[in-house]
Amino acid sequence: MNIDDALQHILALIKQDSFGGRDAPTVTVTKETCIDSNGVLHGELQVHIAKRDNSVVLLHQQSLDGIADERELKDVFADALSKVLAEHSKWPR
Figure 1 (cartoon, one colour):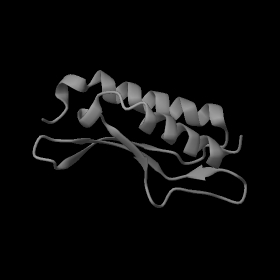
Figure 2 (cartoon, one colour):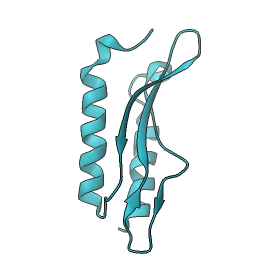
Figure 3 (spheres, one colour):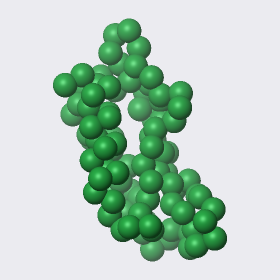
C-alpha cells in the first residue's frame, strides 16, 4: 500500500471507530500535508477535542515529515494517540 493510501486508510479507521462519541478526539492532518515525488510524506498530524462550549482545542500535534512507509506511519499515529489518551484526565472540559 502506498503512503497516501495508508494515510487515508488509517484516518478512515479512526473516524469509523470513534472511541468516546461526541467527546472523542478528532484526528486530522493539516491541509499542507502532502507526498513528494519520492513518495515521502510531509505535514502534521493533529488531535483536537471539543469542549462543552463547542470550542475546539488542539491536544497534540506531531510531525509526519519524512515518513515513507506504512509501518512508520502507523507508529506515529499509535504514538500520538497513546500520548493523547494517557492525558485523558487533563483534557479541557
